Length: 111
Image (cartoon, rainbow, N blue to C red; front, side, top):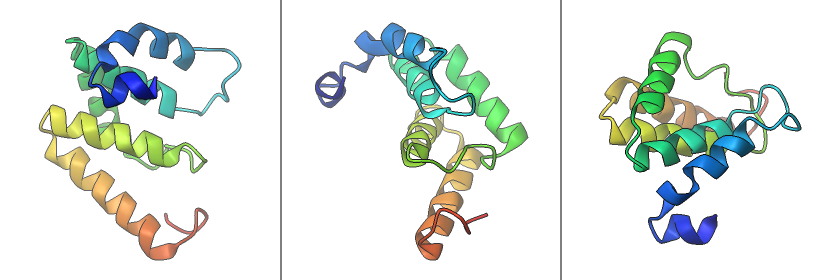
């Protein structure tokens, strides 16, 4: 996956990433795989899922994204999606969340 991503060939991974994101062995609240799958789908020319995700994040905020080892990956996907779809409100929310994380230095006190 990483090689294709570095080569700019994420679109080839869209379906594989989507199947991983819906795997029953993932923790229920895990969202990084789903966010990455959405990003890959967008880069494959399928923007509907990306727009729906950003709409949901605008409504619910970024707080429900679980603080886990994949939080930063989820935030990367959010930032990439917001940039690609020119969604400044989500981009600002992601920036604010990243700044809070940086300033507190802990996963447990950022909210």
